[in-house]
Image 1 (tube, rainbow, N blue to C red):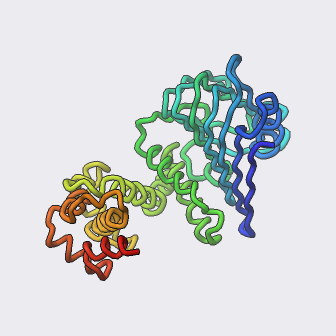
Image 2: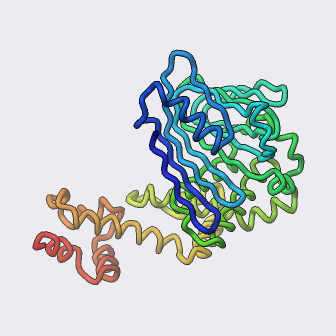
Image 3: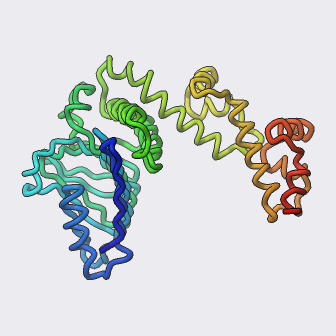
Length: 330
């Protein structure tokens, strides 16, 4: 039957992976609907006419939160009246990288690429994508998030524009859940879920108290995640600076430092560790044997060779040339 992988832990978390690639084309839709749609997600799916059905999906389920990443051929997904019999009343935030449309609570909503929309699982509704699409869905209990919102009903069936900074932070933070978070402790899982609630409340319109709490918890965690991701991505850029990074995220340099310090590091320390790691990998890789040590240092983001040599020796207990020589001998 398709590739379905199920991992469960005593913390009541689970993960599922599903792919239609191992199925005959004639069996894909039926098996997906029965196993994945009806039993796991409680959603129905139908392909657009003339498009063979294909999907790859990952589900992370933690207490109080379900996250789905999907890569699909053109399709329409629905919460039908028949499926409402399960009594599920979650709020579902649906994000997609392609244009689509949504029908919910009597509204017809046009969705641009990277827009999101919030649906009520206690009401019928559907989302359609006429082209291939990558999507992320978040399912949360209405009672858990509703209390954090100024007006939980007002946000239903309305698009969340792709330009929303809070939405971008939420989507970045949710990417952490692709890792094996179900194997984390119950305390870590609970904290991660609480951060998602904070961010979702800010996206949808948090009460004053919830917004203040979110700024100290979920927003800070998401910003730290995004800042580290940006440093990771641009570590070899010799021009990367604290001031540029803070401007990129529209916060003060001191705020960036404060977030990193909460995580047990500083901007300089974190950036140095990433650059040294890059240099070490290059020196251990025969593909870069034609490069001089100075070239490796420059390509890793260092502008001062003496500083690079000192920092490398302090970090690895050996000089760059000896690390390369040891690899060649072995």
